[in-house]
Image: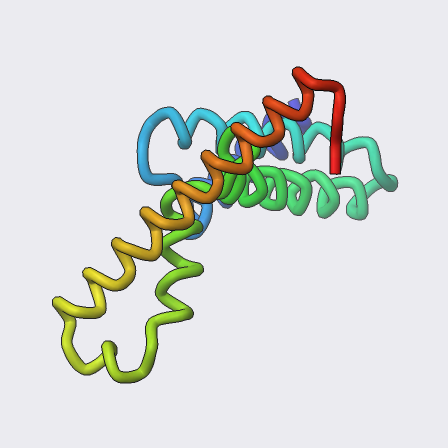
Amino acid sequence: MQKINLFLLSLMLVIGSGNAIAQNSEDNIDVLLGAVAGATLGSTIGDGDGKKIATVLGGLIGANVARDRHGGYYSSRRLESICKDRVPAQYRRNVGVTRSWINGCVIRLEQYQAELEQNAFEEALNGTSN
């Protein structure tokens, strides 16, 4: 019963954390699975209160890792966050220009990720690697 309560507490913390919620339902399933996996791993560490803390932290860390990395790639939400941090100062004055710059940045990064996947696939087929 205590493990169920601890799991529910971890789940409430994950859901209550705005950072942990992904953009679409498929990503949210991954976040939930990441939270469960992290909480499970965390529950193997320590005793007593330390074990409880490790379980909760494991759940939060697992959820955030799953949110940031979807299918081995950064999620669109994470890419958007990266791009927001890199908007040139001269574009920040105009909201429309800023949004366009961020959208273009996300598209370029998604294309780059796709190219990396294609290269890795081709290297695996050819038995070569860099």
